[in-house]
Image 1 (spheres, rainbow, N blue to C red):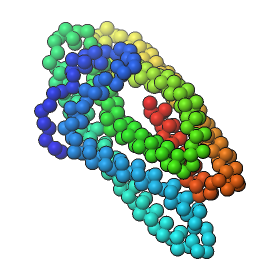
Image 2 (image 1 turned 135 degrees about the vertical axis):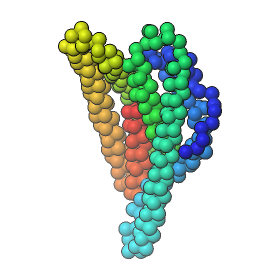
Image 3 (image 1 turned 120 degrees about the horizontal axis):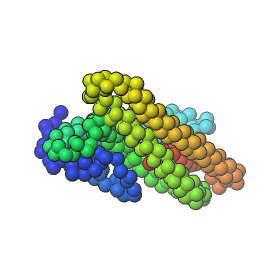
Image 4 (image 1 turned 90 degrees about the horizontal axis):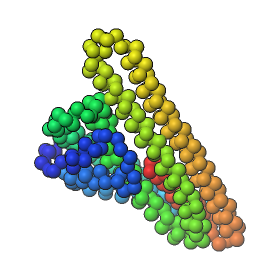
Length: 325
């Protein structure tokens, strides 16, 4: 583990505000993430290696459809047996590079996320214990613990997996879109015209889903805060024989958390169904238009297969982006 260097901690004056739930809109939701830049800068070497591994993985993924096209166009002939053998050998090498780069990316990104969150928890805790008693008079200790543990875990997801997935999706989308245009400008025109009509409604629906997810997280934090306070004052509760009342209230808190989580899950299920229908319908439409182009001789079967694969890549990226926000 690299030695921890002293840097300015996260703008901890904003931590007090974030510890108390408040509605966040627009770019205000992203502003706290900018405060993590000093933490990421501590491990810039590892972050650079992760970016390199991510780029290699994206490029090798984009090479697969090209090999498929050439195999379809030139391989299925008696003279193409040697060509098929060479392409499959190259494909195995490409897959090996992809596997190695993906494993390196996952390890580097996840360990960076774990390291940043460990530093963040330490600094936030140091700030909390330096606050005045008046702050703790108005704040619930259970909620503070929940924010310190559960919310920092969410930050780990954002710094680690989510950032990695977002960068990979961006590279794949840009690369797949560019290769679609190179493969067939005509079919690309249909796809690019349809993207705004598909993505914009999904983005709006995705924001609603994420709002429900945040509500579920806040509701769970309330239940955790109540349980923590109850356990801390268990002697008082038992002295006044309030066990039934406490049990009933905590049961209500848990039920609210369950209902919030169920609403969020139901909304995500509906969003998943809509996305899958739109994605596969788009692929079917591309196959329909492309099959007519193959019959007229304006495009080869291999080129159509290559285009469909790049379309699938771009569609999968759009689906994940809408789901993860």
